Amino acid sequence: MSSSLLAMGIFTLVGAITPGPVNVLALRHGAARSRLACAFYVLGASASYAAVVWAMGQGAQRLLRALPRLSTAAEWLCAAYLLWLAWRLAHAPVEAASGDAPLPTHLECQKHHEPGRTLPLLLQGAAVQTLNPKAWLVALAGVGLFVLPQADTALALLQFCAMSLLACLVGVGSWALLGQMLSGWLTTPRRQRLFHHLLALLLVASVAAMLA
Image (tube, rainbow, N blue to C red; front, top):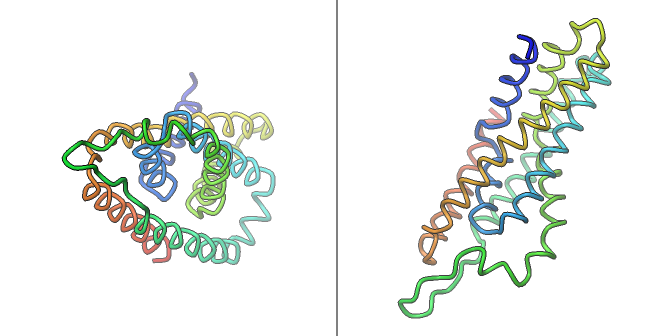
């Protein structure tokens, strides 16, 4: 692997695995849903980010000029959507325990109605990523660093899109896997409620940081 591809890989992985709204929701889905459902959310978010990178590469010069207005509009749109998701998380239902018996695991809770939830999770992953200003700004920075300086910009953009897709699958998937590991701890309504509130606070904090 050339040094430029290695640098591209590091850049895309760091951008994909750092905390943010997409990864916070991946953590929540990992703790509450099956691996198949989580995979659909991760796939939606990853494919959406690759599309964002491609869009930035196609119109980088015009987007650079329009960025102040584009960034402001995207930030407020995303903030409203994420605050709505935070409210939904804070008020998410918990599984009621029966006596002293432990609650069923997330896989047992979801196995009867999970198939019908895969498409909405795919669309949610795509929507959150598309409305995430961080994704657009990181993509724009990456295009400026790794695509525009190359003689063959078409090939460089294709490489950057492929690397971004792979990095997002790994990064967002890691947060979903962490959620799966936490599912064994979330066996009481009290712990589930605390977990939902913490995730809601993380989303609100990400919105505050974004608007700051």
